[in-house]
Amino acid sequence: MGRFKGKLVVISGPSGVGKTTIVREVLRRTGAEYSVSATTRPPRAGEVDGRDYRFVSEDAFRRMVAAGEMLEWAEVFSRLYGTPAGPVQEALAEGKTVILDIDVQGGLQVHRKMPGASYVLMTPPDEATLASRLKGRGSESPEVVAARLAQARKELDAARASGVYNHEVVNDNLEAAMRQVVAIVKQESTEQ
Image (cartoon, rainbow, N blue to C red; front, side):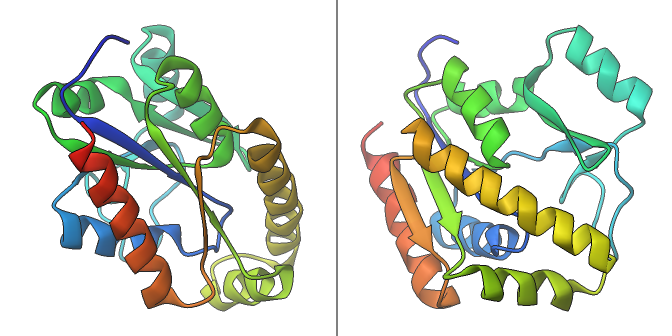
């Protein structure tokens, strides 16, 4: 994908690990740019199109894939998710640090195209904590929570086995986890 002046930081982890909360605060504390993913799922309460996700139809999403406009994409729980490449490449060309908040599968796809990026794996302290966080959302049925827990096990195993993630942050204390990720982003930004 060529050389860029900026730095890409990919933050991955299973649903419920706290990625979104941490990423929002890391952006505030570092001034990094957020890459807004596209998805075919409907917005959750409080989510804003263009800020949290680009909410698109399945047809529009598939046209983007066919045109080679996605840095990564996947079908997750019957919905399509992906990262439009254009905005990321533009920000990197301008020398900005860009943060991607994506799942492990997406992170591994990005690594094939951009191996020089930094990869941060967010993990829960244990499975019971992750289950409690997923149930606490109140937005998913018990069956979906169980499926997300099974997926989380697979994602964490795949991420660790891949050797792609050069940082692992355990979110057992939100502020401590945020400070760790901020330090990683600042370090990566200075190594451009």
